[in-house]
Image (cartoon, rainbow over all chains, first blue to last red; front, side):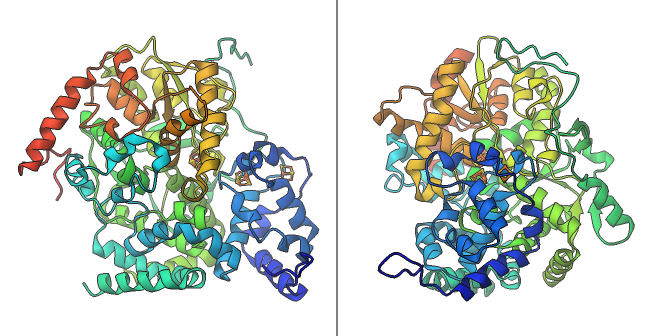
Amino acid sequence: MEYDEKGVSIVPLDFKKEIFKEARKDFRYDEYVLGCLNCGVCTGGCPPHRFFDFSPRIVLQNLKTKDPELIWTMMDEYIWACFQCFTCAMICPFLNNPGGAIAILREIAVRRGFESARKVLKPYSRVLLKLTAYGNQLSPDMIQPDFFPDWGPDISYASADLKVKRKAIPMPTLQITNLSWDVSPEAMKELYEIFDESGVFKIIEAVDPSLYEIIMDIVEDVRSS
Amino acid sequence: MEIRNRLNLANVGSDYIHAAGRKLENMHDHLLELESKGEVKVMHINSENRAKDALTLFGWKKLIPTNKIWHHKSCGQCGNIPGYPVSLLWLMNQFGLEYIDERNQTSCTAWNYHGSATSNPVGLASVAARNWHRAYELGYFPVNHCATTFGDYKEMRNLLVENKELRDEVKRIMHKIGRDLVIPEYIIHYSEWVHVMRFEIAKIKKYDLGHVTVTVHPACHTYKMIPEDCIYDKDIYAGKRTAVSTGVALALGAKVADYSTWYDCCGFGFRHILTERETSRSFVMDRKIKPMVREANSDVCLTQDTGCTTTLDKNQWIGKAMGYTEQVPVMADVMFAALVCGADPYKIVQLQWHTTDWRPLCEKIGIDWKKSEEGYNAYLEELKAGGKPQNLYEYK
Ligand code: SF4
Ligand code: SF4
Ligand code: SF4
């Protein structure tokens, strides 16, 4: 996001209008954004509201103004505070889905490779790599004490002698350390096809080009196996 | 309606179930309409699935298959809480039920979507359809282990029913990978299987739980995402809260205590648990563990999802550094059920991977965890020496 020395956004209004138009064009938009009573019920139940300057009521109110300037102010870090728990959607008396509307805005931020999205997602790249390249989001060998020192001394149990401990899990699919379960290459190949056809690979290229390169190397290997 | 809730306990009856003031479309009916028009193929529950009835938020009937299950595993569970799926399969074995657990399954990719937004409805719905079709071609009914898969697949089912363009696009992609769009009649969470099987499970329990107090942490993606498709029971929390997990704990004879932050999320946040961990930690201790211990004097916190189990279990240790003295062991409803039915705490329930101490709970129930630990360590030695693993089923 670009600002002048007084902190005023220097992004052209036309661009902000385009972003809002893109959000409204999404087929889910009219289902997620109905009327808003400004009642604050959603914010009352919203978990991150307790920790951040973030409120689903504001999200809905801003969207209802249809003011591209106001909507633009949320495209930075604001939308990334959401936990995606959908408490708001369950309790909104107007049946809005603020969490869903946030997902639409996030998709735009990522698709367009906004700097704010890149920054927020940088520490997420390990997960993205596993999921996109192997069809599994997390693996047993990712639980290392160096990464999770705050999980206490017992966490080292999960990395010592991992191979044999995984072999002792009585499900043959789980007896592997670098994936949660041993995803078959045929399943991976189908997933790549889906990522190609639905634009998921393109999204990753926009938000993290170097990660995209690494993923593509693995994809090529699996595809030619 | 009479609500006898003075004891703050969960087994409270009412004549009504909670309808939250909403009246939404019944997607099941719409799906069948589309099928009759030849617009979509539907994967139906059949007699071999030995389905049991349950009621959802508005009193609509939902059929829960108990047999011929295709396990849609969860990456977080298999990677980090292996006792979660193992306990479920172990229970199914106790009843001689048929299931398939196989390599030809992908993650739902929805955890990633909710954390990073690096997907879109076409991508998510195609992944769902891919896994549905795999179950369909084998003639088994998919049961989702992760609450996020459950929430996501419910949402994708709704979007697919409501939007022809999305359907056409997903059909195109399915044809490209040699598959077809076949939507399951019901989207099922494993906790629903546990719920409808709870009285059967209670018949094989090995321990008395009259002195054990349970608190339940319900998962947002079970009952807040597409809330109308979640099980309610007028005899559990007077039908005002989802009945899954609480139902099985009550059937097993435990006391289920209420606490003021029951509705709160666990603090996982999808992205936050990995990249803004202080938020998750604070949330865990302040909004969940402290109230569970102080208000309910809970012996164990029962969960029904991957992220919640991890977040609530792993973040209690660091709480001590901030002066929190409250601690409570965390495990999924199905792990607790298996434990109480005599499953080995190490080999089956795999509690050794958990970081918050669960041994006092075992002792309170009367389970000899030390003996189990010895047996497990000996088993590891056998495996190291080239022994063959003892599995719950044979992989074909
Ligand atoms: S989905 Fe997001 S906005 Fe809605 S309650 Fe949860 S965290 Fe708040
Ligand atoms: S989105 Fe719903 S709950 Fe939130 S302020 Fe508006 S009407 Fe109220
Ligand atoms: S991890 Fe947290 S946000 Fe996700 S389903 Fe569980 S309680 Fe809800």
